Image 1 (tube, rainbow, N blue to C red):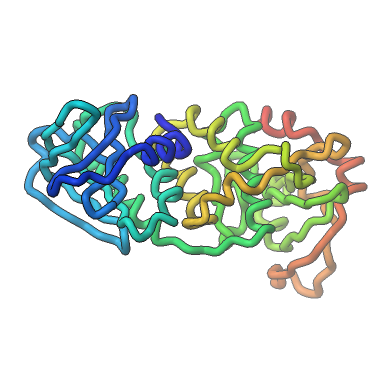
Image 2: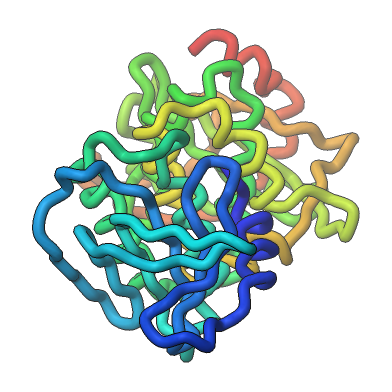
Length: 316
């Protein structure tokens, strides 16, 4: 599947057509078409099976999804006339084009024409939902997402971590697996200074691990977009959609953040897994009190009780 960057490069080559009721387009290697309409809208046209049914349309903000339409598309010297699913972004929202194409690149099937239009329509409805999201992430949120994706990339079974990934700020724990609960903590610096909640450590104390990741901002480092390019090809379609949904729930339409922020792991402070039983914590007067947040330096704990990430992931 083409990456969002590749789709953006293709879309930039398409000119707005002069002829009414016509589209100009470029065919991707997978068989769908990046196109522009006479109003300047940005279109992705997906070939449909002949029995797709009557014309239907749904709209969310500046994004429109049309099924069952027949279109005339000029592709180089030739003209194509056929039935397509049409996903359109209005011309006055070019600022959303990166997010629009990022979600499409992750959610569209690998082969066309589409044999199950209803399943694809459901997938594209998720595209519309994600493009409404505007969480306005902070730099700390981006660092946390970077560290979680770093862990997924490091895993020998990436799909399993994606299936167990919660990835939302409202979740108690980052990864819930059969035998382990993993809470990923990221700090920009060499000290393992992390913010934790007591209730996270008490969920399943003997099975909970804090994954401590220390990073440095670096122009030559890796970005979230780099991780996604490595992870997505290893995933099944449902896992790919889950990963994309989690990322877009975090960054919303500000997908440039996926490439703008680059970090490296400190070579002398490698990521380490620490059992929650070794994590220092505040004393509370009552066992019923668990919603307590605190900051703790885990540098010494990691030195004496930490285990390498490969060991943790290999034992999952």
